[in-house]
Image 1 (cartoon, one colour):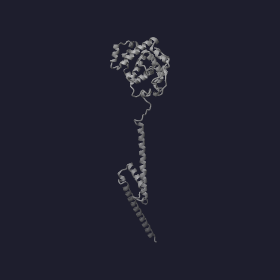
Image 2 (cartoon, helix red, strand yellow):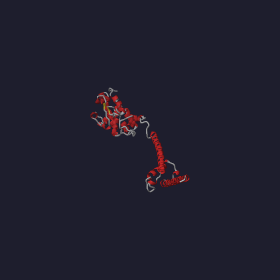
Image 3 (cartoon, one colour):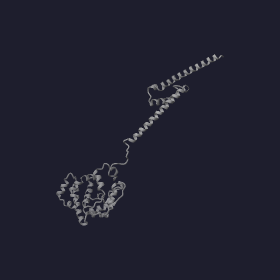
Image 4 (spheres, helix red, strand yellow):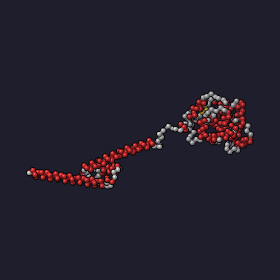
Length: 325
């Protein structure tokens, strides 16, 4: 074969190879376009969002082995490269979005109004721990009585007479109702001066009974007057009503260290003893429960719970020497 023939043969072979390659490329592009229409009919040029790319990548991965579209032998290397590229793009964008969402969530956590940046209570009310029977719904006058009066040792005769009378009213009212009218009651009974109350005549008693703002039953008013007469006798015999009452606890308050409200008694053997003696001397409405309430209010017994802010203060007052006023 001549050299010219050989050259023509090589040129013809190269031309055939080029034509074959061109035919394969056209066939591949047609096949890929056919696949896209089945998997994502809208077309890539319609949107470039990460969601669309992610959906296409997922669809490609799910249908790559689907014989209803094509078998594995018909997938060209170009198909595989495009599919891989789409997955990488979608994965990259998903990571960026995930990081962005994570940062936003962190920001929400930091600035969320439901998260308290300062866990320490700021108000004075929250810093104070009181006995469990003082709640957020307790009236201010009752809270004030707990914080300033209840459990503080009382030695004045007038104050002791007043507390005994108020505790007797617990049979008809609660502490809040009594304390709201405390000033009116005190004024009505002359500051609970036993000498003055003991001398009240029938007209004065009737006036107190008819006083609607006091709202006291006739038996209650007459009881207070009769008890005043008993106190006058006690003062003559013992020097003071204070000396008589504090003698029952050896002139020193009983300090209890209760942790729970259920531990605080309604009556005690000591209260029963005092009640019996008062009844013998002519006092009325002085049962053991009323007497123990009086002992608590007058500081003859310290019944603040141990975790109450007033327990330590009242204990310190109780440990002082008895002061007769």
